[in-house]
Image (cartoon, rainbow, N blue to C red; front, side, top):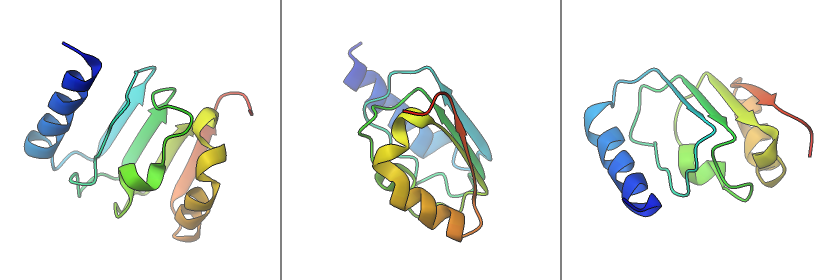
Amino acid sequence: LSHQQISDELNIQIGSSIKNLKKLRFSNCDISSLDIKSISELEELQLIYSLDSGSNLSEIIGGLNLKELVISNDILPNNIDFINSLKSRKVIVKTIGPKI
């Protein structure tokens, strides 16, 4: 399967079968397209070295009521404003890895 087919299948599975998931972690994956906004019960999300450094977190998780977000520092620079908006809503944001 191609990366896009796997990503599409993952989005279908997430959208239809695990909507009540509370915690989700992607670590060292190669994810080019991810939309998890349909997991309305999600409280904790970890995206560790899994997204392209230019990924837009607001498109991936915008609208979710997360309690905690853990991300690798590689995606932090392009998402500073969104991260600050999460922090202002009292979302715990943790970063992992070297500062870039």
